[in-house]
Image (tube, rainbow, N blue to C red; front, side, top):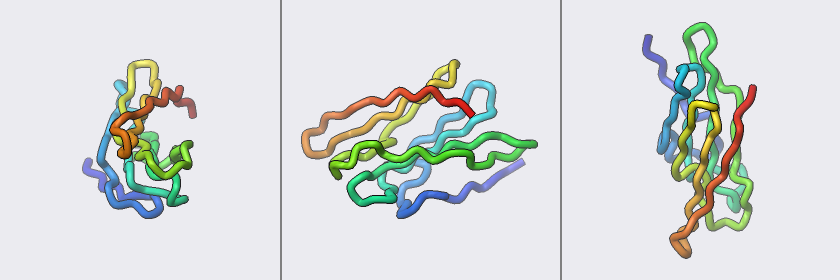
Length: 105
């Protein structure tokens, strides 16, 4: 079955920049490195869980860095243990950071 997922993120302009699905197909992770709830903390990742065949939003992870220079969720990846890797790029110096989050519902 086809499902269309609209961005649940505020000020979202690049929803779907990165998409990852867990190995078991039960979790979907979608980033938007430009979305923000606070202009100084750009980037969010939406986390969905499959319930009776449909993905439902369960959590939004926002950029923990509030210096205004990073785009959280520029790249995301997930491993078999459902550890979520979220990278951040700092456009001023073209360097970045990596966050490792152990995702649990």
